[in-house]
Image 1 (cartoon, helix red, strand yellow):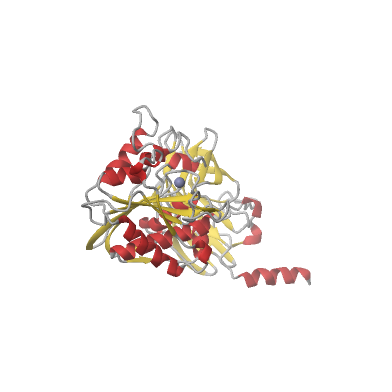
Image 2 (cartoon, protein in one colour):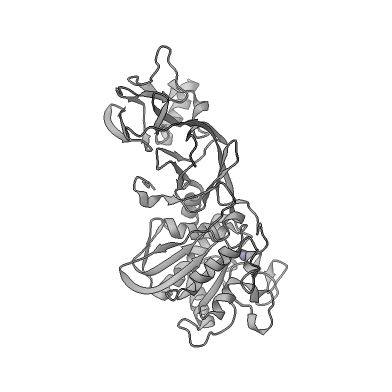
Length: 448
Ligand SMILES: [Zn+2]
């Protein structure tokens, strides 16, 4: 599926971490039709990627037509990025009491106030749990001691609260969701932790905090026996069942299947630098990108295509992280920036077009940067003797050294524009949009 990120709505402010200032983001899907408000929280523990990836997809791929859906996809962002259950201990045990000097004090207080917001009707806390919960012992992996594929409630009912019939709602939700889950082993069961009758551990959790503040709350667990995309898929099934139950009308950009969920999680990694003077598609990106132009003496500003992207300042380079994954390292070269132009003229396969700096252009056979007086064009990986500026030259893929590509497949190349020693911006040319057949043809040709 083709998605364009030309509009700003496709990019989210991502976290740039210079000092240890981690914060989560709250994304509000509003609508014109009034209705209930669902709050979905992902990533309270950093090593449960099914939950936070599902929440991230809920932010990027859903539109809400009635009611509201609020999403916090990255509650414990530091632990997500550092791939730890909890860098500062288990955040889901800090809701009964927390020390003022706890590094997560502010985060916990902030999410508490969102939970208590009078507009919020139901709260879902997304987890990845071990094995498969079953009310009765089956074997080591399946039984009351396990958490996976369950919908968690703290008690049967919450008196005097709209949607307070937790157990009967959980029955409706699991029944609905299970209709769509073909594999019987994967179906959801309800787990009641009976928190108030002496479950000391569960008393410290986010959902119990919500319950005590008069809010209907549920924990959703996907099984850690599955891969991340499988877990995220099941989370979305449950979230959709809740939206249907609440009468929240929604639309999504993707078909809900394991394959599409995997594709979106793996490939939706794009990063804009400096208000999109540069824009990188980081699908199959190389482990490091060298000589990335950065502003002298000014902090890096970034935005990413989803809320799980963070860039960490490592002094000599920048680490691009996405959820639990390490994406690439950016090795900077520092410049003053020039903003006297925001687009350049390109001829692409014989068609002349004006291209914004920060865009990606698909090229089939060749492209050429047209006359650009007063500026210098640098196509990374291309050199021609006697040309200080590489404009006015038709260039095909074989003219560029593939080891200079942004991606590992040698298809995505940087075209950088400079004015004297100042950096103006970058366009990416993408030789990768060709059908697979032509690559095969090339292979056959070389054989014969
Ligand atoms: Zn968990």
